[in-house]
Amino acid sequence: MDLVATPLLPEGYKVPASRNEEPSSCLRRLLAEKPYVFGPGVYDPMGAQLVMYHGFDAVYFSGYSFAIGHLGTTDMDLYSSVEIADGARRTVSALRKFQLTMAMGDPDKKVAPIHLEIPPVVVDMDAGYGNLFNVQRTVELYVNAGVAAAHLEDQVMPKRCGHIAGKALISADEFAGKLRMMRSAADDLGHKDFIIIARTDGVSATEAPESKRGIELAIDRGLRYMDTGVPDLLWCEFPTAERGPTEMFCAEIRKRFPKARFAFNYSSSFKWFNEKDPITWDELGLLGVGFIFITLALQHAAGYGMSTLLADLKQSKEEGYMALQRKEWADGADVPTKSHHLFTGVPYHHHVGREYGASRLNGNLDEHLETSKVV
Image 1 (spheres, helix red, strand yellow):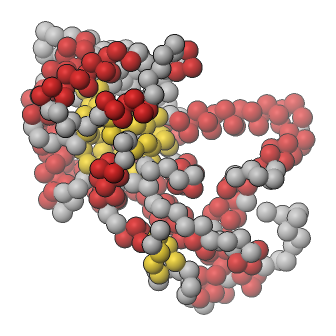
Image 2: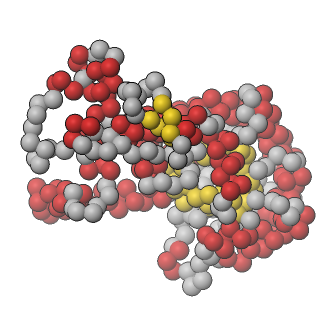
Image 3: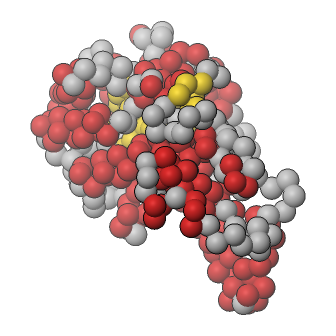
């Protein structure tokens, strides 16, 4: 890993040189180098920082997760483009800050620096939040926020989660126009590497202008979208985890477009553990899938973790919380949030504050408490 200096760190501290690489160029490079890129689904900056800490190639900023985390509601077009774009902007910014704080470590407590690559962020763009000019505006918001890629779907508005009944599709021509606008808006901003993912909900749509339905409609839509020359990745949303439709869709698209690459939602809506023959990520890579993501990965993990703690607190009171701390601080446990001060960069702020002469922000205010008793 090549390291470089940055004016945002004290002398002698460095960050990975990839800090200066455009996020979309980084993701395009990863897609070219790897059989597939995987991105866990997040809904906030902290989740994205954990994805980064654990070394994943990408972050997926899920719309359903954002609806839950931002509004406490479901995925039915209930937030605006500005809201999710701001969530994505804060997430990208947090990853850049997290790289600095981890590269600092904690010199006073002899915690060594950790050099982390910033994963590119892929963001849900739903159905574009309106007509093609809403798409234009949203792409501008995403590109200016530092987003690497976005996906657009062919549902009518208000759209709904691909695994909720009642989906209807706009015309293929209207959607093709939205895709072309995505490309034009990104190119106009000088971001020709911005990655566009076209999604069809044709498999389970109950309303569409065409007479075709099911996988036949999805394949027809996929081919028409690829005909525009816009999509870098093509995503078909499936109603179940069965491998057959996925294999068929990819094979049929590749008959006309042999180099087509796909995105695949390893959906949290499916009980994968009950599948007799679940498709593997390596198999998806062989089918041409370039980007794999789990939409609600961290939402489910957070729900499980918080529910476990709350049940323990309810039953065991203070002992329930101490049980959590013992797990966090157990030998060999790699839990970066066990010290919320280190995770959020208190040492970084103290040392940089000292460099810039901020007397109320530097380490001289340390209370010198016993480290075995405080984080």
